[in-house]
Image 1 (cartoon, helix red, strand yellow):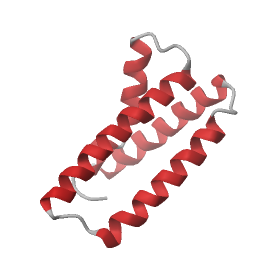
Image 2: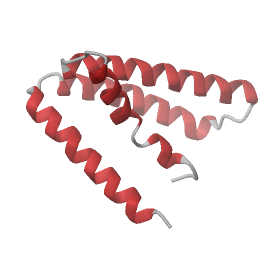
Image 3: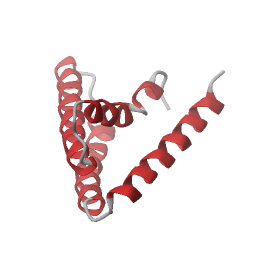
Image 4: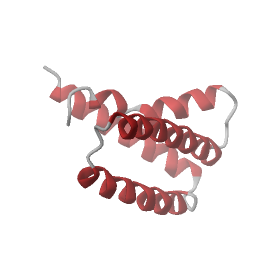
Length: 106
């Protein structure tokens, strides 16, 4: 992973926690709002790279297409999961990421 990429690994978890604090008790609704926020952040980042001339289309375009279709498919699947299973899945994934980045740290 590029230097500094670890900072973005938990963005979804932090946003879900913040949305829960602000009364988004339905996890599916909070996840939808989280995805909207991350989409806006990603579009802003893409606009910055596009206007700076530092965009590598060879690498960026396949990632953008995969993210678009993968995100759409994941949302359709996640909406079918019961909320308790989704909560435990999020907790498990957070533990995996935390452990991975802890072990990678110098």
